[in-house]
Amino acid sequence: MGHLYAIKNKASIIQETDDDNIPYNSFWKLPSEPMLLLNSDNKWINVYSLFSKEKIWPRGFPLNEINADNNYSFEKTKTNTLIFQGLADKNPDVDAIYRLTGALPIKFDKVKSFSLKAGNWSPFNSQNTIFKKEAFPLIYLPATCSFRMTDIWRS
Image (cartoon, rainbow, N blue to C red; front, top):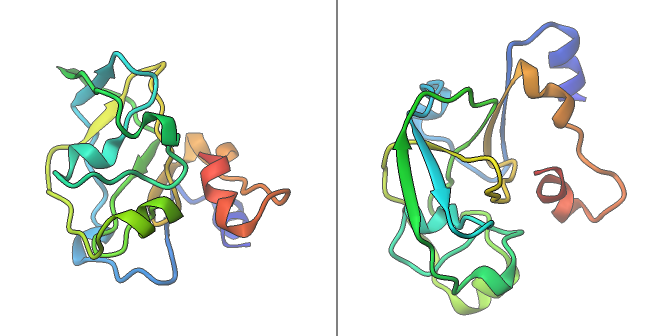
């Protein structure tokens, strides 16, 4: 309902967070456009690995890709990013396998932002996400799956 209310009232962005997150003060500062474009030999990008030395991955990341060698490269270029995914320290959005094998809490490194290049994929969630107006048609949360998967299937 909140999404529909924001769209009806001509919002230019919609910013989401989970009810169990406590945002930093910087949460309310809109990110600048990423200047780095990430490219990889792999189709799937484990973005958590770019912000931590821990073996951690986001919920929805294909399990068969967890140990893949990631040959990332960055290009300095201006992008037109429509969806910004931030990170959630302490208890990030990870899957049940990580919760059984990894350690929490975790604090992510603060590094520059980047965009994924066309053809590269990473799941995102609703813990710290900003949608620009052009992406509002993509905000729909599926109702045909479990509540825990709605934001992942949307991504």
